[in-house]
Image (cartoon, rainbow, N blue to C red; front, top):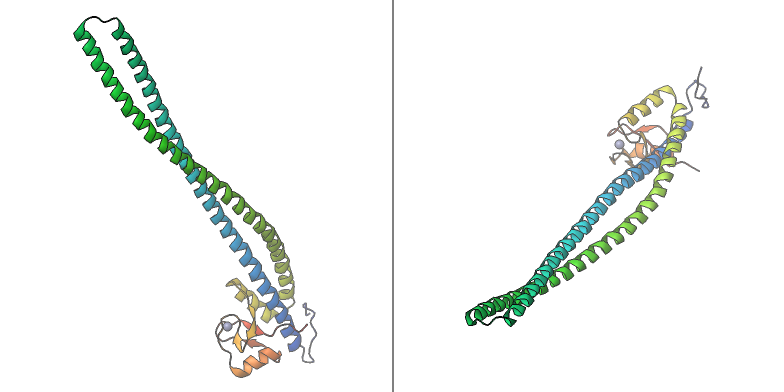
Length: 250
Ligand SMILES: [Zn+2]
């Protein structure tokens, strides 16, 4: 008739001490289960943060790389302009050799002087661009080194968390199974109460902590606090309706 198989009192009820001890074991399992679930949720959210962080470093590195390429393209363009101007200048100087007309000669000289002036300006601009390229290269190197550093640091943390996540996940499954087994051993009324509380999330059975409920931290009436601590009677918190029990005696 009775399926949970706990020792019975003469009146046919489950021995109170046995029931309280069983609830005390349930409290321990529930506490460990909460810890395992906390580890899993913390690692999942930290993993997301690390991936976001890595994406930011990669974006920075890509931008710095693009900035460096852009500066190099502008410098190459300037160098091409310089070469074209030098070629034009050589051409004009060559042309002066065969010129006998004075005005034609002066016109060529003005062109030469204009090109020389242009060359000076272009060379100044090229020097400024060279400084820009060097700064962009430094920026690119720093961003790339930051990216690589963060990648290896982040990966080390992800690897470490992966091990902990696997352990916590296995522990959670084992704890949940053990918990179901112990809950199924409870007398029906207690079992229903435990199941209802667990549906609301969080533990149904908590340990007494300095005379207070370990679930909602409300102070228990003094006698109830002592009874819960000594395992003398089954105590339920008036604040959160959880069972309040002692630490298992082992
Ligand atoms: Zn409470």
